[in-house]
Image (cartoon, rainbow, N blue to C red; front, side, top):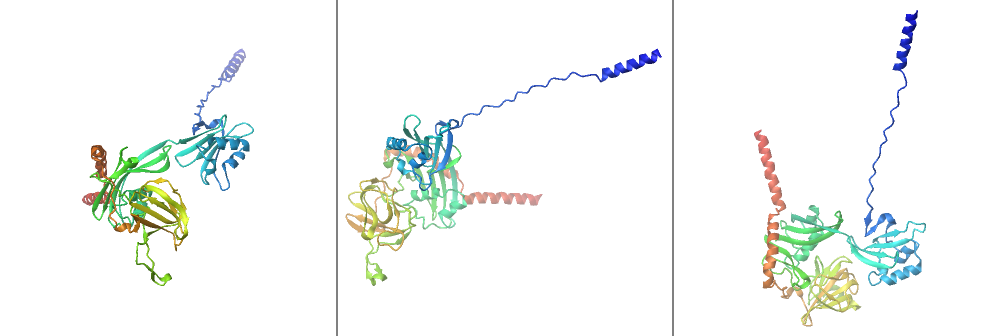
Length: 432
């Protein structure tokens, strides 16, 4: 009995020991590290310090309305406009342009800074937090060099579409070769190579095409090289020259449009049905284009007339020197003003239908010694070649660019190489 009692007691003790309360392990405290984010900065401001409103100028908007809607009183708006007018004309904000308002974080949420995006690169900051000040600034721009080659199948624009390349490169090429190649008479099989620059804002946002550094255009089998050369001794600071150092420009462009399409030539014996087939001399050359197409000065010169008169409509006249003058008729809008000095290729107006005209075009008139002549029959002067003292500098720039151009394969050569590779692979497969 005692033995049984002792055994039972030991059993209970063992069970109690086995199933007894366990000490609870205290939880491990975990520290979560949350990194402190860097403040967001843009336009020279820490954006976290403000309420940021991004918007676009809409029809009916004005600088005053935008600020008044953001709790700035009219007296302050007028003070701001008057203070910054030499830097930024607040009346000239354009519909469609983006802007940013930096507002206070208090209950008023009043605007403190107005930022106006003039284009993808340039912007104006108007700060009126303490004292009114305005400043023109630019976003950081990255320049990336590109190389392309192409073969003409129909025209230059469609070729660039096939290459998935910005057509602005084609326009710049047309400007460079304006006197040496007629881009309306390109032939199938003409081909080109180009080294050019693309611009990016903040490394990612495309901001357009920069300069063409070098190009080769083969037209009818004849190669024409063009190299960009920059030097303070050159008129305008830069120009394009061929491998011999000859300037690719003439003193006058062939016509006043980027892509010149003649719709009516200079003709002193022209007869018009409307006037009973009587001789009505046409002393100008008509270049067709859509309304609003930019009209370019064909040479450097000073604007002597910019007005609207009779059948000429809106027109601009430029004196280039003691011998030559040019005139541009039927404009929709005149940009150049009397007294302005304009450079070759500068926009002086846009195509319209003002005056006596049956369709949108610019009538281009060319004067030599006070008499209207046909510019296509004149032996017009060429631009000056490189000065002898500049040639060593030019050659040091041109040499590496020519090597770079020569190393770019034409598209046909790339395709030929791919075909050869394919044939080689197929023959290997056959052997296997």
